Image 1 (cartoon, rainbow, N blue to C red):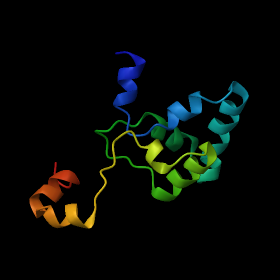
Image 2: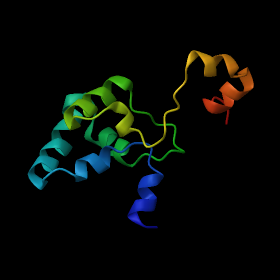
Image 3: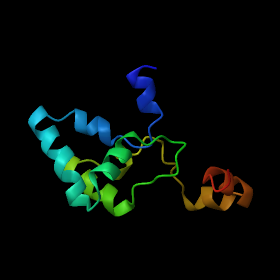
Image 4: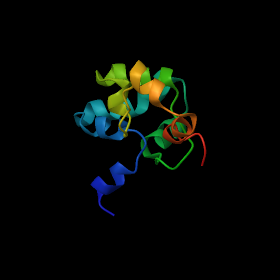
Amino acid sequence: MTGKMNMNKRKYNVLQFLKRLPYNEYIIAKRKLPVACKVSKRTFERWLYVTKEERLEISADKLALIANYFNCTIEELLNNKVPKHTTYTLKRLHDQELIKQLNLTK
């Protein structure tokens, strides 16, 4: 499997942002972002490679911290399209459609 195909299966784009850094900044970020997020290096490493099928999630506060470091939005760290809803589109949603869209059942 190619690297690009593998990236599409990932839940987050954190690794892509890391790889864009100059080498010395990459090393510092890889060592110190887990400390800043107050998680183990192993947990942070798992975040880099978690796939869309896995249940593991990065909490919103940790995503915000990482996004601030990379000077990007949380949405840019997510490897999926976040649907935009208005009051009109929410009114039109049926409960079953909403359950399916939010992936509440597997």
